Every structure is written in C-alpha cells, then in structure tokens.
Length: 243
Ligand code: G3P
Image 1 (tube, rainbow, N blue to C red):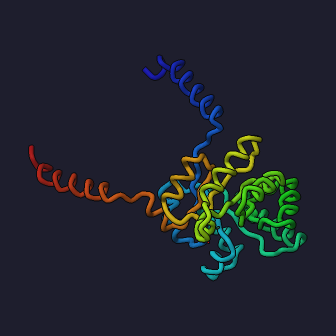
Image 2: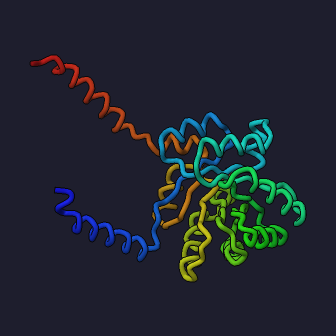
Image 3: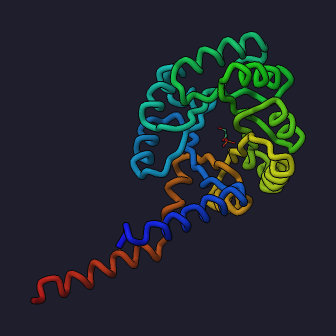
C-alpha cells in the first residue's frame, strides 16, 4: 500500500516543506549550558540535545582545560559547541578563535558584545568560522551582531529579569527585527532560569534555547505523568497473569 500511495505521500511531504519554509521554521533547538561532561552525557542520551554552550565561569567550575573539555564535549554531542574567547584585545580574540575552530568542525567561537568583539566576528565569519555573540542585553546590540555576520546571538534573559527588566521582551524584539530583514543570525536564548523561559522562547519562535541541566530535567517532569505511570503499572500487576 505504501508504494501504491507514494505520490500522495510525496505531495504531503512537499506541502510540509513549503509550509515550514513559509513560516521560516526549522525545529527549535535545545542546548545545554554547562561544561559538566557527566551531565552532558546524561541528557545527550535522551536524544534531544542539539548543542552545548559554555562560558569561562562554567569551565572554571569544572577545573579542566578549555581545550580538553571542548574536545570531550564534541565527542558526545554532534552539534554547535560554543567556546568563549577570553580577551578584550582584537588580535588575541582572533588568535584564540582561530585556534578553537581547529579543535573540531562543530566549535562555535563565542565572542563578547563590544567593539573588538564585533570586529572579530566580522573577520572570523569571512574566514568561515562560526560565531556566537554573547552578553547581549539589548536589541541594538543584537542588530549589530547580525550586521557583523554572527552565526548565533545570545541574549541573556535571566540576568535582565534579575534586575527587574523583561528578558522575554528582548527576545520578542530581536526575533521581530531579524524577521523583518531576513537576517540569518539565529537567536539563542541564554541565561534561562526555569521551564517557562523555554516555553515562552518557543512561542516567540526563537531558534535555540540553552539551559542548565536542572532546567532540562524539569522540562520532562509532571506529577500527573508520574502518578499515572504508577497507577497503570499497579493495575496491570493485578491482571497480568489472568489467562
Ligand atoms: O552561558 C551563558 C549564559 O547562559 C549564562 O547564564 O545563568 O550565568 O546568567 P547565567
């Protein structure tokens, strides 16, 4: 029957592809925001981790060398792995970024949002190196990152919420601006603090959300699922031997 109905399946597939293109949709990606290799292995096993973001603070927590850890992560997750430059000097940023990019084809060079960072992004992009502009707190910064050719932009929503500003409003603005001009830069929602941040980011059509492992753990949980599973198993136990 599959072969007989093949043309119908083909038309449905084509329609789906067209719909996705029209809505500018590709599936939302979920990244882990950690440098802890055990956590990365644990959640990668779920099959839904698309990438990993790290920063100098997260690397420092692990007490390992950046190069060693990034290479380890690249073996576990086959997707963008962000590795951050640690300098405010343009030449040094470029030196570090070029070195990181040689570690693995999936390494994205994370660059801070400042004048040197913008220049570094422009140059690295020309060299074919993927970049992630980090520490973005305003729509104007996100606009400049896109103009410089950043592959990803990381607005930090939790840190904005922390100072009584609306982090999610910033995501809305960036998504709108990028859509208006068809910028290719992807919006990576960072500094997430709880599952609602992930849901709201998805509703706004953000390309990616990165989250600490604790939030990934919360995404799957629901008490009614747990009690439902327990009840089904208990009831099944009562009849499983009935002939
Ligand atoms: O990795 C960047 C960002 O997600 C850090 O978040 O929790 O330190 O504000 P946080």
